[in-house]
Amino acid sequence: MALLIGMFLSLGVLVSGYHHPPRNADVIVILGGDQGRRLETGIQLYKKGYASNIILTGIDRRYYNPDTPNWRERRLKEHSIPDRNVIVDLQSRTTWDEARNTLTAMQANGWKKALVISDPPHMLRLHHTWNRIFADSDHEFILVATRPEWWEPLTWWQNNLSRKYVLNEIRKNIYYALIYY
Image (cartoon, rainbow, N blue to C red):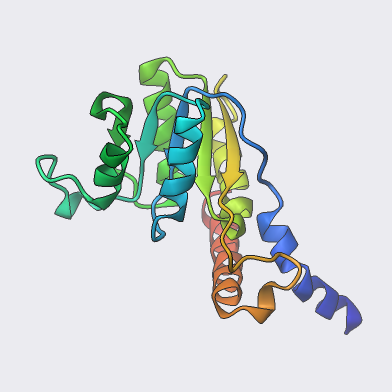
């Protein structure tokens, strides 16, 4: 029983353990699915010169109009990030798609290294998915985690948002292991 409790309590460390400090890259990939924390992290990395290009994912093509930028594109414009440095990925619907479509964009643009921005509990699935997609290429990715105020890997179960996120990620990791890996 103690082993099961220990395993449960360590899930926060398990799901968030694959992020790294940013390094210089060709492109910053800002994954969708949050309320702006990932975008703000990507903007800060861009402004610090870690990469000169950005890919935005998680934008539903059914509602996208290039003449009317969505809130994330507007935020990039507010920070004087030129449209020519931004690719909007309208094809990806899953983490698997994001990795595959990013690799395709990197190959098409001659980019070799990407910084991939997401929240800490997303890192385990990102690690396995992106490793799988990038395995047979000479391209590289670095997972960079946001720093949400609600995230603490050692006490994740005490925060409602963390608890939901971790349990959801465990389910998604099992699904991905069965379907993709």
